[in-house]
Image 1 (cartoon, rainbow, N blue to C red):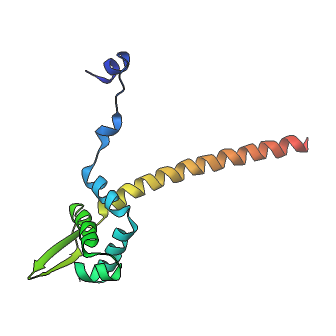
Image 2: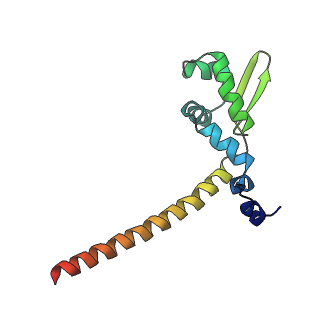
Image 3: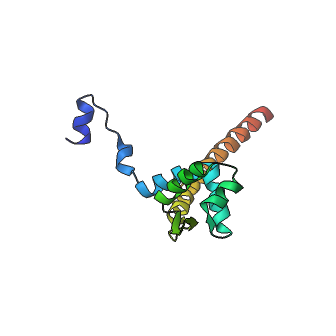
Length: 133
């Protein structure tokens, strides 16, 4: 059934499903939390154990493990267990795809705001020309 058939039948076609990007979804979801962004910042300075991260962020070990698991699923952090210590480090994947997505959309917003500024300037010019006559 194509989109026209869906529309004619009164059903709603959700186009957003077609644009799903699981890797980006996982990354942005992981980065939506301030603690997880803080973990990324901390690991940017060097590898750290989950215990030391929990201490730095003043949270339970269980809570920190959950945050690290979210970052791990997104590929932003990797962990290695040596003996009883689980060490975390930044993943090799990086944030290139996320940065590219943000840049494309930043340019889109910038272009729209520039167009809006131009319209406002034209309206202000017309207003000042009209009041001058």
